[in-house]
Length: 210
Image (tube, rainbow, N blue to C red):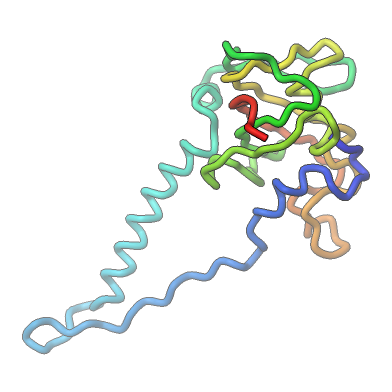
């Protein structure tokens, strides 16, 4: 991955993030008349609100499964995956050791991920979009912590296809003092605040066809 001061690292991950305030709640329809011509209590607006509430509950349940890798979801339910810290400061833990070929520098690969701040806030997820990220690993197309965490080095083994790994990136291996997804000069306007330590649950799907 490129240095944290670069304008390009992991930009493709952040381009898909929704802009604050962009989502709008649909307006309820006017009350609909009953077959006899009278208006029902609450009408269509009440029915719509009830449907929206049910959909929100269902969406939250489904989304919670997609935002975490299966093994990560199990860890969140009480299991622990102890992190090992490499000399670079990158910490990792293999949730699932893959059985396929090892990731190699310069390869075009596919990887699913969920990115979180230290407080647990999810700022991006390929699972939510329904497709893995495709990029060339180990050549600076993404942030340093990703390159090292997937290809390996400095005491970190390379990921094997089918593997799932948790990465904890110090700011120097992520977005550094600039942060990312910032709109304005205030640090609070950033999706990833300056000097943030980031957590990624990464699934190495395998090589991509170029």
